[in-house]
View 1 (cartoon, one colour):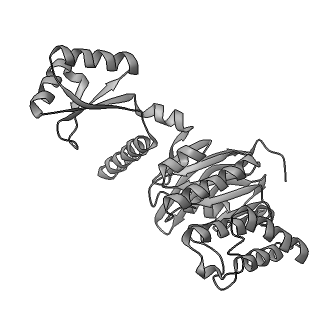
View 2 (view 1 turned 120 degrees about the horizontal axis):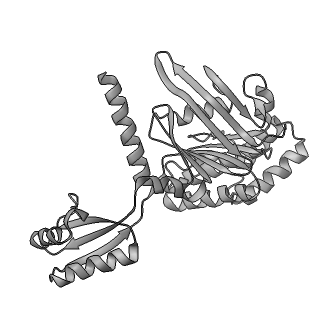
Length: 321
């Protein structure tokens, strides 16, 4: 595999289906041994991006390299260095877990002995030994996803594409899948993850690209993206509407009533310790009782809603022109 600074390099990726322009010039760079998460709403272009990078779909334009190979000119070489787990499990439900793994090993041209040995390794690693001799159709959703990921790793590829790998899983199965993904990264695997779960991107990814309307609209670490949204917020709850009005009179423009929660308000704060103390002191002097309070830091939910909301407003204004 050619040595490059980035194991995945995408410049100006464009793709349309008829008159529908799905990708409008997306740029991506992924360093070796790291994870990049593509975050975005349904229809943003995440899955189309993965399908292009994994050679399943041809782009209309742009430069796309994976492992140093061009996905068009060197598609066969690209396929040898990648693994793909799609949104739905791509396993044969009539075969057992072991048979699925051994079959994929043989398709990757492993010897019969090597395929059997690798299948056993993966069954143990993904906690599927007890279910190894059962048909895949008898597996739970979480077990199928683990088997699907195991199948994509049969040839130990250096690059893995995970297209919404935990969609539909219960919380326990999702945490188990996260643990497996983290272990892959610890072993040096490069991962491109698409997800709608903001917590998933926050927990796993080294860098995040927010994609919406076929464009990359923001990029950075989770911390960097959160910093773009705003400052910490102090949420206050009062015993009555009268106390809420009194608090607004004392704090002025700093406090904004929360329409979603009765008799509550939010204050944007700069210095958490000092500002919380000063606000409570000011309210205490006026004998305004605070029922409860909580400090909230910006989350990826805030980032997602803020950025995609702005994008929708831009698209609407362009349509109006």
